[in-house]
Length: 167
Image (cartoon, rainbow, N blue to C red):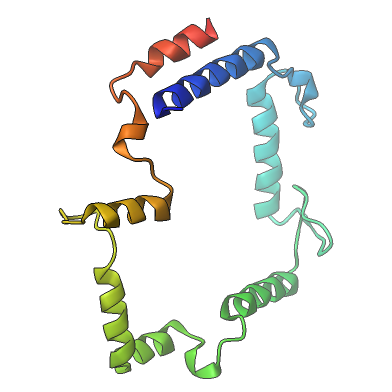
């Protein structure tokens, strides 16, 4: 199946979904805010709740974060410490900061040479590159790309397919 055929099928599916969405737009009565008359009033109600958080009128509740509550400073600090611990993820003390990693990379010529060699084997996006057909096939396989012959007509009018699908 060519890319053109697949994109046409997607356009038809999207057109069908848009028909369904247009037929079943949600009613404002389903909003969980008390202002159900219009969307602007509901958004203004939410803004008032947010303003209440920043003015200090909100309750502190470490078990829940609702529009009227927030965590305590100690709960926030604990959450940040947990995130940092997860980021460091047991790295040795000598390599658990960006500065220590930078120093290590600066002082390890073998690693630097290996990285430069690995970078030299990449497919470039910023400059032309000569790659034989075997390398091209491997690069496409590595990233799951299709060959030009499998793409289909790149000048196909997908907008016409889309418009036909939603009509």
